[in-house]
Length: 272
Ligand code: ADP
Image (cartoon, rainbow, N blue to C red; front, side, top):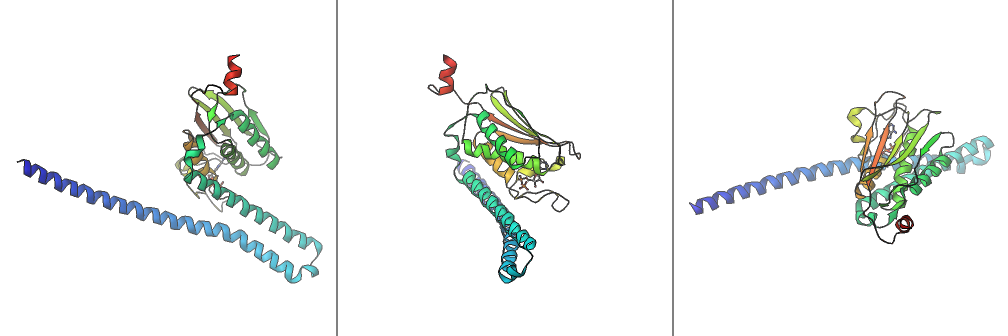
């Protein structure tokens, strides 16, 4: 009977191994499909600005000196804008790679979330001077472990989206608060909103909603980077939206409050 049991166990083990192998195969095929989609989307993103630049430079070299000065200036402005777009895209890709490759480094330093949020807000004010940015940043938030540079990029990406996906004249709000064992960072806009079915999907790599229906084109990486960084910091990010035009979107990031570290300036100051 023991031998029979062993036999049976052997068979079910074998079967389990086969099932696992099949599953791994499916997962691999799915990953390959995804990679192919990502690659084709990536080459599109790189090729479109590159061909604008090439076109403009070719015209300028061919008959730039016979062109009205205004046309020349327009072409140069297009070259500048497209080059900026490429630079932003490459910077995003690098961030994404850092997130995917180097997660372990992310929690090394101490981060003053107030300072990081204020720096992102200052950057957003410079980048979108026409947008009203309401801030609510208390100055007694607990410390969080994390890479300040990457987290500033996360907050900036959220503010950038708030500007991109909202009508001119509507305000964006950036609010920080201590919330139990976490610090919550909220970015809220009154823009076009996100349909309920897409609230999770928007965090996927290269996901863009409703391209061509009047939404500005982006890289589709901002939120994937945000999610990667926030999760590497042990936190969560989610989107809420009533998905009605002008009702807007709210992104909530929660970062876990650090265990106390003796000797940190903030803690020493608090102990005085
Ligand atoms: P993108 O570079 O396209 O903005 P993101 O990863 O930052 O890439 O965002 C993914 C998609 O989620 C966007 O293309 C957009 O459709 C949607 N989205 C992001 N933020 C907002 C927002 N604040 N309001 C409405 N839609 C948004």
